[in-house]
Each structure stands twice: as C-alpha cells, then as structure tokens.
Image (cartoon, rainbow, N blue to C red; front, top):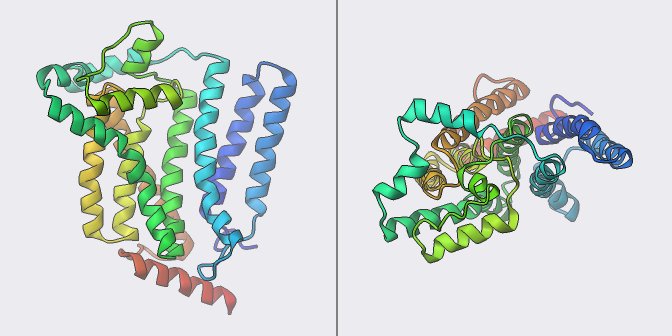
Length: 313
C-alpha cells in the first residue's frame, strides 16, 4: 500500500489521535487494568486504521459506506471519551486565565454583557435556535455529498472536519476550560435561562444531557461551523460557502450570547478552524503533487478520479 497516495488521510489523522490517547490513558485510569485495556484498545485502533485498505471513488457497497462513515461515529466516541477522562480526574480549569485575556482583548466580558445590553426575547430565540442548528449545519453537508454519491468530495469534507475537531480535543486535554455556564453550574450557582424562551430551554436541556466538562476553549461549535463554511467553498461552490458562512456566523455569535462560551473561546475556535484548513489543504496538495487544489465540487472529484486512473496504470 502506498501511504502517500492510496491511504485516506483521515485514517492517519485518527490513528495519530489514538496513539496520543493511548499515552493519556497510561496515566489517567483509576485502576491499572482499565489503563492497560484502554491503551491496548487505542493502539489496536491505530494499527487497524493504518492497515485498512483504501476505498476508491467509484462503486458503492456496505463496506464503502462503513468505510466513509466511521469517522463520524469515531468523532462522537472521542467527544464522549473526553467527558470520561475529565470525570475520572476533575481537571483544574484555566478559566481565570481565559477571562484575563478575554478582558484584555475585548475590554468587556461579552458573555455577561451582551444579553444585558440587548434583552430582547426575539433576539434570544433566534440566537438560541442558531445554537441548536449547529448539528444540522455540521451533518447536513456530508449527508448531501453522500446522497449525491460525490465520494471524493465527501472524503475531503470528512478529513477537514474531523481534523478540526481532533485538534480541538487535544487542546481540551492539555488546557481544560469549563466556560461560563458550566463553571457557574459546577460552583452551585443557578443561572437563569437568558430570556426564558422555548429555544433557550432546549439549549439548557441539551447541555445537561450531553456536555463534556472542560471543553470550552477553543469552542468546537465555532471551529466546526467555520470548517464547514471553508470546506463548502471547495466541495460545493463559493456561493454555497458564502451562505454557510452567514449561518456559521450566527452559530458563532450564539455561543457567546447563550453564555456557553467566552468571546475568546469563539475567536479561538474560528482561528483554529482556519489554521487546520490551511494545513489540510497543504497536505492534500503535497499528496496530489500540485501547488493548489481546484475549487468547485465536481472538478475536485474529477481530480481524484484522475489520480485513481494513474494508479491503476
């Protein structure tokens, strides 16, 4: 197998992440047998991912569907694992440092002041709905590419999105930050819902049902939606990218308004997505042997097919 051309980069990204998590579990487990089991599991997963055969851009089968869909399952499991690790050893949060930088950059803590300055129920409902729409924005584009059988574009989209999230997850392990709402709940301070609306109640219920502590900086909400907007320009069209950028901007704003994140978290999430996107594009160009990749969905798929034909010759 030619790792330089045949191996999907997303496999290598997840394999590297698994190796790092194996090292984390060596020191994080409460008991030795749990630690050994998790280390072995992660090393096995890394080896399996390295050895998995490539999937071409043509053809469809349950295997290819599983092959292209596993990163999204692994993404959910990785998020849940963060919560498990942080609950085993409740980390000391770095919120105080983030607040200092937040004040220095913006002159005011916008997670506190925004809803006070604009206590409008309509605005609150719109921004809380935007916060909830994050999941549709993240999963809608890859689902559309899968249904259209644009497999090369789906591979590219998945790589960019997963790489963005895994970089955020590594920061969470090294620099846990709880965020304003989670920190208030942890201290026993009962914060009222910002505007008492239906959407605000749904956001709070969602936070209580599935949040992982210590995962505020950088905001994965902001990083994920920014990555989607950047990837949409390449995998769909520049016009689609612009529309999704507007949607992403609403989600970014909502993370601060709902007090789930500091403004610094949001900015760091956007910058993280932009940096990861540039690194991923550079890696793809190196693999393709070109200076830059073409923009626009089907032309990208055609490029992938040409690589496959060259390999078959």
